[in-house]
View 1 (spheres, helix red, strand yellow):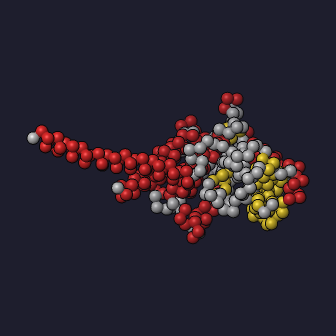
View 2: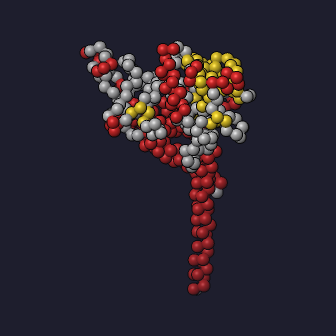
View 3: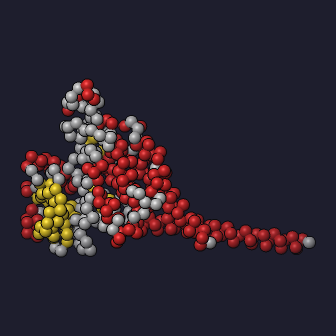
Length: 350
């Protein structure tokens, strides 16, 4: 009897061991798949925030070239860069698709002399903020108000839906790719709010189209910031706040603190307009992310998980979360949703 009882317990234990081992294997597999997923889609996942091309400051490299080159000087720009066609124009700059040593580049030139200060400010920001979040600087000629940067054929983030509707890229038109782009966007804000220069605010953001035009969509499906002409510095310790321009801002897109507080009681007067800080960028995150997430399967589920953090972004400036908090929440939600997606597949494998 004792031997039979012992055999029964042994059989029972053996039957339990196999499912437990399968469960452990499934958990390990899910974690491995999640890590590989992030590493494949977003190469920066799990890595330090290093320079995007591993060149020291003042140098660059393009395409498959291994060696770093110093930023091109005025002479090099004249001698080595060939204009091909105009591809864009804004209030400050006119942009030309150009070529440098068989590499496509973007050549930006000042449009009107009155905006020299904005152009020089943008160039200074571009030089100082080179990182994986910012378009790559190739060269510049300050005397002639010319800047050369890496060319990205997809253009601005405004073109996202158009690009993803192309047959070649339809496989990328998924909630997780779009969510990673939204994470890129918030990562840029976090970088600017904690930049080497201090807390910088994206002021060219009076409406959604204007915001989207400040960013580029890369061929590897990342978002980088391109236009840094209006990037004032907030220094709360010194009591220094900012105002985005000297004109009255209107509309639901701008943060409430950017609106003229006296309404129709008194005509707008710049000297009486209260200044504000980087929390204006936080207010706009839900609207920009909503555009990026688009209307694809799963995007509404993402919005549901982001409901609370997006609600917090729309509170008063003092109650809004930092860009770091929003970024952490986005990454946590993404990790959770990816696991929920992979786990059923893992169960099917078992």
